[in-house]
Structure formats: C-alpha cells, structure tokens
Amino acid sequence: MVAQIYSLFTVSLILAIILPGDTRAAEIDHAARYRACMAMVKTDPKKAFSDAIRWRDLGGNEGANHCAAAALIGLEQYGEAAVRLEGLALGSKQKPELRGRILSQASAAWLLAGNATRAEAAATAALTLAPEHAGIFVDRAQARALLNDYRGALEDLDASLKRTPNDVDALVFRATAKRYLKDIPGAAADITTALQINNSHPEALLERGILRRLSNFDKGAREDWLTVLSIAPESDAAAAARVNLEKMDVRLRP
Image (cartoon, rainbow, N blue to C red; front, side, top):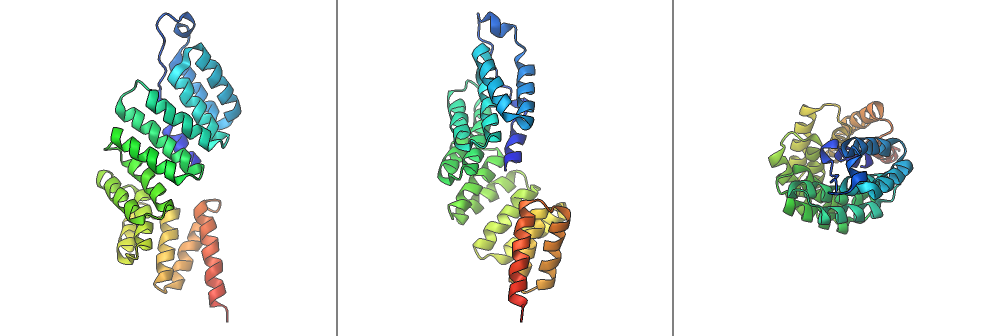
C-alpha cells in the first residue's frame, strides 16, 4: 500500500505556485525542488520532511506541502499525512481533477492509518471532483470492504472496471468481494480474466487458490499457493498463502 501511494506522488502533480513579489521564491526552481524532494521521500523521508518545511518557508507552497505529506507517509505518520493531504486538497487552487487525486491519496493514507471510515469519506469527496478516475473507485472499495460493505465495494469495482476493464488488481479485488457475497462463479470468472492478462499475478493466484479450496480442488489450491511463495516470497500474498497452506495441511492430517 505504501508503494502504491508513492506511485501517486508523481512529477505531474507539481503544485508549487511562485508568489508574486517574493524575490526568494522567484529565485527557486520549484519544479526541480519538487522532483528532488519527492525522490528524497523514498530514500530518507525524515530529511525530505525537513527539506519540504524549509522550502515551504521560501515560497514552496502547495508543492512543498505535498512533499511534506508524502514524507510523513514514509515516516509512518499516516493519520497526520492524511489530514495534511485533505487540507491541501481543500485549500488548493488547482483544477478539480488534481484536487480529487490528492484526496484519493488522503484516502489511501487513512487506510494505512486503520481508519476506514475517514478513508471512505475522503474517497467519496474525491469522486465528486474526479468522477471518472477509476482508481478512486478502487480506493473507496477498499475502505468499504474494511467496513464489511462488500455490496458497496462491488459497485465501486464495477464502476472502476467499466473505465479500465483490464485492471488486474481491480479484477482480483472484485473477485474477492464476490466471494464474500457468495458469488463463487462470478469470482472465478474475474480471476480467470485476471490471469489471462497476467498469469503470474500473486494476488490473483492466491485468490484462485482460495476459490479452488472452496471447491474442494485441494491439489490446484496447493499449486497456486506454492506458486505464490515461489514468485513473490516476501509479499502479503505469500504470507496469506502460507497461512492457507498450514490450515489445509492441518485439516488433511489423519
């Protein structure tokens, strides 16, 4: 999830505004400063945060505040990062689409903070500003799933996949939502499509293993989970695969 958020903090989100009449701000290449600050977030978030605050005091404005929020995510200060991102989006002079993307980042940060209610609210607000952004529907679906609203999550994932039908992550997530809603054939269809697009997607293989296990196809389930351990041993999917293998082995013991 943290890596996913970092991928959202791109140079296309350069927000710095040079204040008229501020000679110090006029001397700063804000685009270059933003790129440098965001690059530092991934390697040294503590230093990036300090740099962002200094830059803000020199007229960095929205770009500096955006980098500071990203650095707080790197420092695992997720709630504070989310609050700052929400404030940035609400006070920004940028176009609605961009403000919606910032609120989407706030939603993801709230998820990391363990606050699904705030995450859902931020994603809903983001969709009022960027209603065609497929990724925001996925953000809200994640929040709704954590709130046990799988029907709402499914509706959001349907909306996302209508806009980006080949999004493997969304297909896998929708399969999981359908499984929780007892639509096993629908879940299996989504996983088949996902693996046709990417046959080594760890989460898709994990989910297919679960579906196979539910269908009493233990051999296939084991193959899928062992494949996950082989291709992505350090992933969350691998951790889940290990748990499922252990549970299956316990049940199979005489």
